[in-house]
Image 1 (cartoon, rainbow, N blue to C red):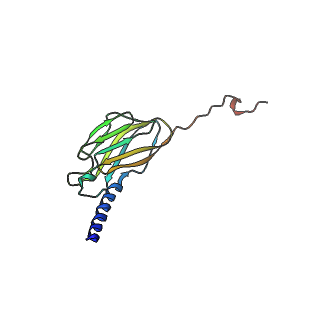
Image 2 (cartoon, one colour):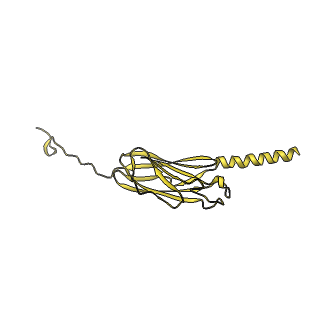
Image 3 (cartoon, helix red, strand yellow):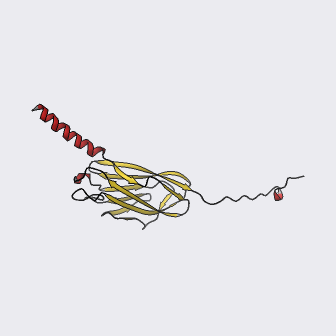
Amino acid sequence: MKRGLLFISLFVLFINFQLVIAEHQVSPTSFSFNINEESSYAITITNTDIGGLTSANITQVVITLPPGLVFRTGTNSTNSLSDFRNTSNTLIWVNSSYVIGSADGGDNAKSFSFNANATSLGSFNIIVETKNLTGTSTKNIPLTVSDTITPEVILVHPNNNEEDT
């Protein structure tokens, strides 16, 4: 009797632990764009939580843009059944039933896209959060912003690049 109760307890604990530590896959793994060029960002999220459980359905996707990456209003799109809202640098897709998932726990990959303009050079992170009843999963997507303009150097002195005599 005790052995059976121990087995059931361990099984329930294992299932709950799997739900809590389940990861959501995010791709691509990085972006690289040029400064001051409006670019299209497409992010695919795959729900790898245990199939068939509606508690594993992702009900909210939050994409936080770093300072210097400016979202272009009206360019957001997705193939999920969700409502979109945003603040200046936070893009949110939400549905109380599921943004990624379904009534039977299937349909586990969706794309989220938007246009943005990078106004600062450097390396940054785009933060992608997915939320469901078991918790929140956070992933960083590195973004590199480069400058492709060749610098121009004009010598004022010495004239014609000659030394003074």
